[in-house]
Image (cartoon, rainbow, N blue to C red; front, side, top):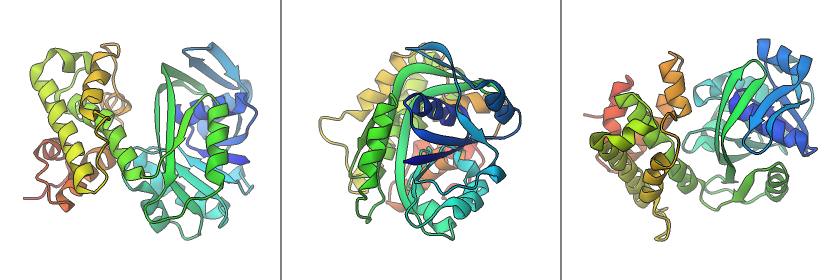
Length: 308
């Protein structure tokens, strides 16, 4: 299968590097110094198991790509989604599979509504802790690389999904297909959105959450609201999946200086995914009749409107 990865940030590059190393036909869209560096010397990538390596990934500018891929993997920040819709409309056919790996809820429906062309649009979430160190240089910070994918609510499974899973597994990812992607996205948000919300609201690092009871209490309140959303939406977490304990474990067992990507961008004065990771969670909860006081706090802090 021919893959196109849109988004040459940390996650897109790490994914392209692993897929290229496993022999997959993958091209990544990049720009500026990042594109030049990858084309000149390859992708410099650090991974916990391989150390420092250089991978000759295939990278092109957006206007230079003129193929029709079998699979498009979207790895841009959620706030940049509108900027890539023209590219999706240009390169996708009705048979093209689009797999967004964004930190957002119900993102497949959002993409389908924005595109003017038809495509087979899935939903997905990725668990990979990584950062961009400079042009053409990324680091995978922790030794996990998980991808969860599935069809949108109300859509039938597609045969290509099994091959995509196989290709990802062969590319060092722990990939799985699940029947309910809203549940899968909410589960990730217990770890990513809730932790990011505490870090942005209070400042500091993950280590500060563990040592400050007020911050840990806020983390638990945010996590509980996500659990409440799953219950109200009809996709509760299984009894043997204690996502609250998982959220607490995630902050207690990572190095204390760790920051989520949102917190890293926030500290650097860059745009953050506050709409999709905070405001959308709050709004979905309100749609389902929940009060959402914890998410109201971070949503308001980030300048979004909350219900009165």
